[in-house]
Every structure is written in structure tokens, then in C-alpha cells.
Image (tube, rainbow, N blue to C red; front, side, top):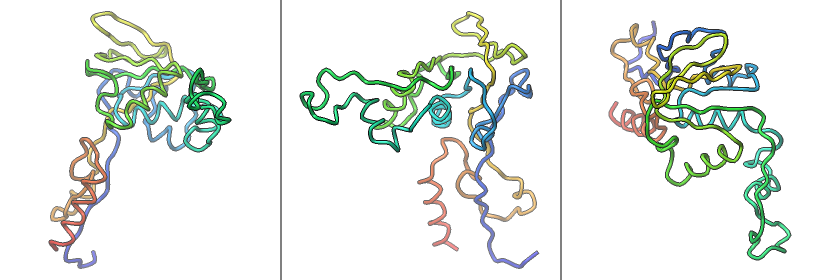
Length: 214
């Protein structure tokens, strides 16, 4: 082993897998699987409605050009007249959304409003985008089991079965600390230190302060 004076572990996080009966079923994917290109079916239940759950849902629901990268698509989806014939560019305009690529259920355990923890200035945009594309958002969900049929849940005391092709787990993260066992004196920063409410600003602050200290 090389003789470094200090070692910093900024190894990030790993996805958390909730203890739901059937969580190892072939239908179940993690958000990393989706990001890395694993094929996803036409009907999906997303477990976890935090930032990652919303991002994964937006990624899976889109068909055609992305409004974030194509100006005409953005204008059409938000009902803006690029010819400026409509008064103010918006009067009488009706937003037009492309057909959703999938049927999606976005679920959370907490009973409060889905997406309540998103950014104050952008959260409403994410909720609107998904609502306009028919994403079904459900709060106060208890996850009963996963099997060949799909995801079995209980909402407000009523049992429901979501017949879906895939269940995608977006239920938070755990610190990635496997190296910490071999490096007990290492400094932990970022997600390796605290994975809850993962925050890039906090990680950068920790790294900066630690660099100044050592």
C-alpha cells in the first residue's frame, strides 16, 4: 500500500433496495439499470417519488424530441405561439404533448403530496410534465409484494394490483463504504458520508473544507 498521509473517500452512494417480498423478481429494476440502458416494458411502476423517481419517470415517459433540447417542442408543449399571432403569444393556445411512451405509476409511502420535496422553483414543472402525460401519482402507498402479475399495494386501506411489466426501485440511497472497512482512518465526504437528501453543494463544501484543513 502506498504511504499517503491522508485518504479521502468520495465513493458516492448505492441504490437502496426496500425489503418488499419479491424485490428480487425479474420484473424489478433499479434506477441504475434504467440509466444504463436496460430494456423497460410499456407499463411501469416507479417506487419512490423523490428527485430520482421523477427523473426516471420523465425519462421513460418521453417519446420524440425532448422539450429541454428542442425549442419547437418546448413551445408546443407549453402552448406558446412562435408566430406571435396569438395575443401575448399564448392567448387561446392549447398545449400539445406527444403521446407518452409508457404507462407509468409513480408511488410513494408518505401520505403527503407527491413531489412535495422537489425544488420550489422547478418542482411544479416536473409535476405538470408528468401529469399532462398521464402519469398516475399515488401517495400513502404500502408495498405488499411483487410477483408475476406485478406490484401489489395497499392505499387508504384498499388493496390494489398494478399489472405492470417492470417495477423500478427509486427508493433512495445508501453510502458506498465498502473501502472504508479497509481504510478505517479515511475521511468520508459527499454521499459516502451521508446519503440522505443527496446534495452536491454539501459534498463540494465538505471537500473544500477538508482540503483547507489537511
